[in-house]
Length: 244
Image 1: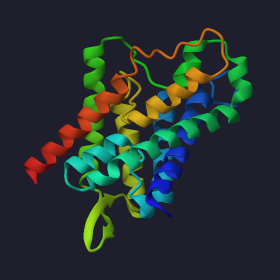
Image 2: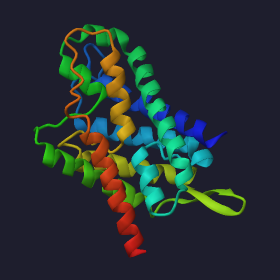
Image 3: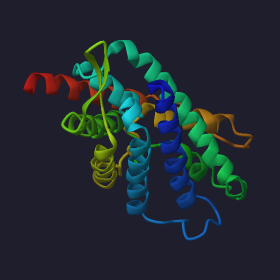
Image 4: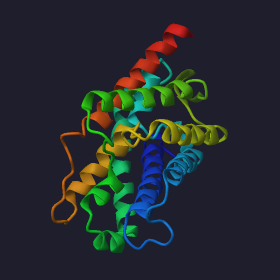
């Protein structure tokens, strides 16, 4: 399987399952899911990462996140020449996966009139609107994610004898899933732990295209779950270089 295709498939799976748990716990008349607690949501996102990484790790390294891709490139563990292709495939996968989740739950979306819950099933938002602190929350959460990943990744792609990609193989899928789960339970209460620009921007774009009245994609906030994670990942990369 081509690595770019693998990133698309992996991110699609991640978003189908991740947006799926958001919909299950937010929308009207779901079976046993409505108004469930934060532990379920955090755990499901972590396990969604596990499933997606397990399937695609051997083919692309299963970054599934532009922040991870750029952080690895900054640390010298990924070729800059591959970054753009990975990021584009991740974004398209995030859009497609969130659209699939919408189709699965379409009857429940039609029943749900609370537009904040509908939007919240697609993209993140702050519990308390304070852009400076919201940005810091996304930065530090993504820093922890990427910095920990540096100690998990192994070489998985060589071209003409040169290692160009360090990634997450099947055996490393579980610890990364647990890592995301822990971040969600500990640091996710402020902004909903996007920690992934594609995870937030792709579904937000899909939500903005839905045929719903009174929709509000909250674009004024949308830069935070994009640039916060990117900044956090670069900080992790530079610190890793300094330490190692």
